[in-house]
Amino acid sequence: MTKPANDKSLNLLDGPVSTTLKNMTIPMTYGMILLMTFNLVDTFFVSLLGTQPLAAISFTFPITFTVISLAIGLGIGTSAVIAKTLGKGNSEDARNTGTVALILSALIVCLLSGLGYFFSDEIFSLLGAKQNLLPLIHDYMDLWFIGSVGLIAPMIGNAILRASGDTKTPSIVMGSAGLINAIMDPILIFGFGPIPALGIKGAAMATLVSWVFGLILIIYILGYKRQLIHLKLPAMPILFKSTQEILHIGLPAAGANMLTPIAAAVMTAIAATYGESTVAAFGVGSRIESIACLVVLALSMTLPPFISQNLGAGKLERVGEAYRVSIKFVIFWQFAVYLLLIACSSYIADMFAKEESVAEIIQLFMFILPLGYGFQGIIILTNSSFNALHKPMVALCLSVIRLFIFYVPLAYAGSKLFGLYGFFFGALLGNVFMAALSYNLFIKRCEGH
Image 1: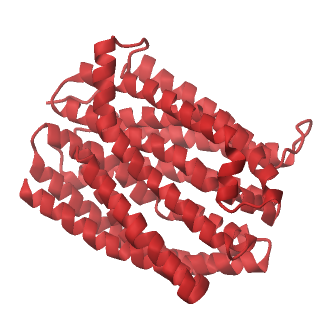
Image 2: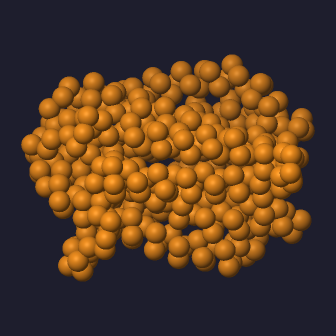
Image 3: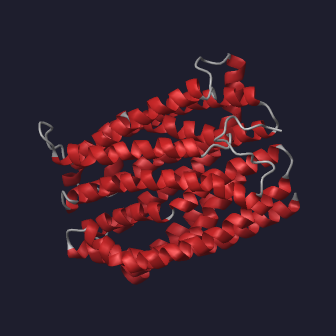
């Protein structure tokens, strides 16, 4: 049996399923609340600059999410391999895997961000950005691409910690970085004392500073305080073996995650046909979605280590129980969130929109799409659970089906038939249909073991 690495790590193999998942997810949720709330600060302060800067930062979302999704995929592979290894009781192999994961993710993200930096104009023009928005997009994205490794390393580091059953430390890392971003945003965007107002470029600089802090902190925790990674390059046989194990799950998982921003890019392009106001409103709605679904996202990060460790220990009955408990909770929780968003929709719209046309579209977004967030939660948890079971190709296939058979096609058809209302309702129906398919498939797989 694997012993906790320290008092912050939970025993995932023997404790009550519901209680263990709750104790893992609550601190993760706190950290994500801080991180995502502070990230929403970017959108809020940029919205004060006007509709054009808000539209510009909305165009960046699919691209930034592509890079982040790659890191999430590699983190999923890292977490699944390490957690299963710990479930078998082998801490040295887990340490090797964590070390290789950090090196591998840095190399891949450098390559991807480099391509994004040099082909920025072509990429954003394809998304539908007009020439007048490209300078504003450059102000934000040039710095973002350069500093992206500073974001990715903490994400992989947090995956290593979660695999060991520690979700408290990742929440502290995320929350601290988010707090720095929130403090620096207004200072760099609007200026303070001798610091000049940098506008949208200031938002990017604030983000970069917070990433550098997170990078230094996570390396210190993993390498010195917790000794969960080696501070030197592993031997080549270990390097190749760990890379193969991570990529076996990480590449399909990254591919599945990167499909989401590709679909978001298509959705943004559809929204762009309705004008800058719709793009700005859709961008705000997408960021509100990240807040509204943060408990689901937190659970999608804590459920896989639980599943993988119990898979490694051969306790498959706990896997099925954990999945069912999580799905029931998500459905009820997200419906409550939907009711809250409806009640607050006018206040949220007024907060983020300086123009009435943008505010109206934000409200329309919140009355329709959040109704499907519970179903979206089922999809997210099912995919993460398949990855944790070391079945990444199943998760990838489900992502392809969701985005390119249900979600985007139904949104596009709805847009053509019923305008903006149809656009939002089509996306909602796509999530409902896919949730039913995902749940039934996972239950059948669990029963088949």
